[in-house]
Image 1 (cartoon, rainbow, N blue to C red):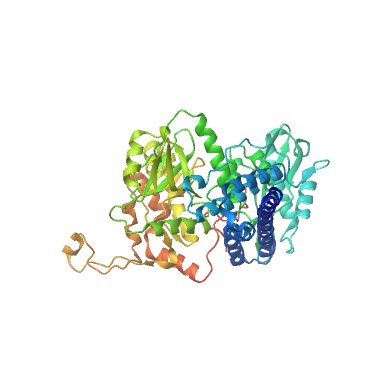
Image 2: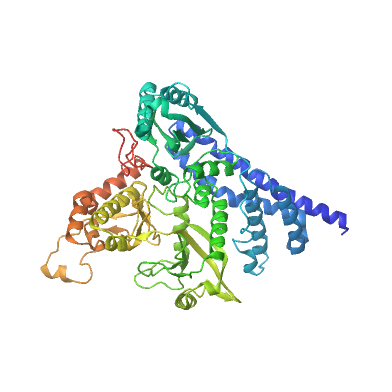
Length: 586
């Protein structure tokens, strides 16, 4: 093949991959743009279907692009020299365009699938390939509106609500304005007279949708201070109203956190939206922001980039993660970094009876499900390499013995064929031991609320042991052990039958028939080994969890499609008649 024609082929392939990315992005936006209609029509089931379709779109787009490349490159599809040339050209063309980093991630996905299809050494196909590069300065800002306060805060709030009208009428426009103004007043109370103190409100032009709610996202500036400014809208049968005004960074951080379902928001460019949100939530990792905006693959790239930078500079070693050792997962962490890594063990101990494929399916299920602020988001990595010298000897020994199907040593690298990464939480059983009584009481009460929140999303955790739940830095209790997770609607909730004879209660096994689907809620307290005062507080608040009637009522709500959505924020900033987190609204 002549040099000129080879160069033409390289250009054609690079352009083809970028066309694939552009088509993906256009289809992504097309699905996302349905969110407004779903909200206005109160079509929550349609909103959930759109979210699932959008999650699946990335892999489908990569496969379509790969199919087109096979036609272009034909027999040269496996020529790694050509691929290196394609990459150099591609990088040079997208390096300084909006969402250029994301288009590089798409390129890597296509390239890795090419290599995998050719059974090339998987160490060349790492999900972390080519991600450790300098962060680019922000060049492409988000679309936004600036509302300068010239006369009164009431005027600019009225303008904001007017500019973000839906096709549904406001239930009480003037009441909403007063409600939002009161929320602002609470924040700036110490800065003097409201209309003098508030300088401006900046909001992103695009509305954020999350199942049954819509959000206007911005920042409030007063005196020499600023804070997040998020308006939450609900669409009831009688119309739209502002349900909450969120100005507390912790509340907004939870909303944009790793336990929430992804937003449907047509932001362009994505990097501009991430930068805007990062400016008001500086502690929020970039990977979480990309992920919560629905760009999970870019979130994965950002997680790897940030972690590998830290790994190159830190002096500590990977060790076993705090908490009880799991039967299904070997979990390790780097003490100086806020992540844990999970590797599926070769064999599961008694009484676990799930397969490796079933465990992977559970994690994929959570990826697509409404996490309701109670299920931790997980990033899946394949063929990832770590410096061998960064591992504690006892950890290496256990990995090579109990995860040998997945872990191997290659020179000075430890190669893991498949792992999951998650944000590190404090295991709830350790939290209850290490924190003072009032904090422990609040955490245990939130544990009960977490179970109820999960139930409202049709999730039964399966294993309710305290060690399977963790506490976030915001004090939220999160579930993170998915191997026994199941749907509430797949369970049969029963009372324990009365014993016919006194000796029945002394038997090691049940004296009555129990199917795989049977759940006996009155036995749940055996999972909660706490001191009497904490036990009493839990029963006072969540004693209904120990009744089959409660669980049957939740199951009935799901079967009749009447289960309420879990509120995505705390009561602070919400209307007095708004429901508590975990109760949702119909």
